[in-house]
Amino acid sequence: MHHHSWKEVLVLVQWRRREELIGKDIIDSAANKIGVAKDLAWSEDGVFAVIVEGAEEEESFLPFDSVEKVGDVIFVKVKASMVSIPMKTCPMCKHKNPTEAMFCAKCGRTLEETDEKNSKR
Image (tube, rainbow, N blue to C red):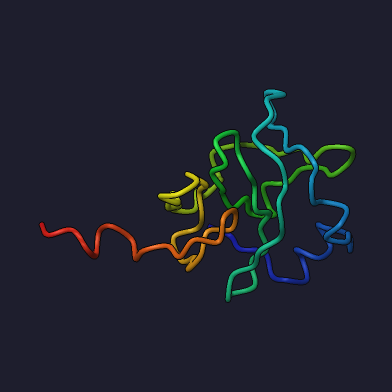
């Protein structure tokens, strides 16, 4: 798979500010709403992505090379390239948090370590 260098990514993004992306609907090529742009993320090897919040509060990473156009909405070539983020649900308020979160973003409750580690197999 071809990875864009960061220079190519920046050309692709055309120096947009983070604020121009956040809160915009993300629409796929079939005119379906995938979710809403929540934030930007980037990996250690310099690949940029949009954090997408979907219908069930689940989050995914959308690599920037999947973004076709940014206007009033963010238009994506294909939905298949999204990478979902593993989430854990707060036992108190049922808010979904990223698995590495220590506290619930909604109610502030301390979150346990993920179940896999605790449960006896």
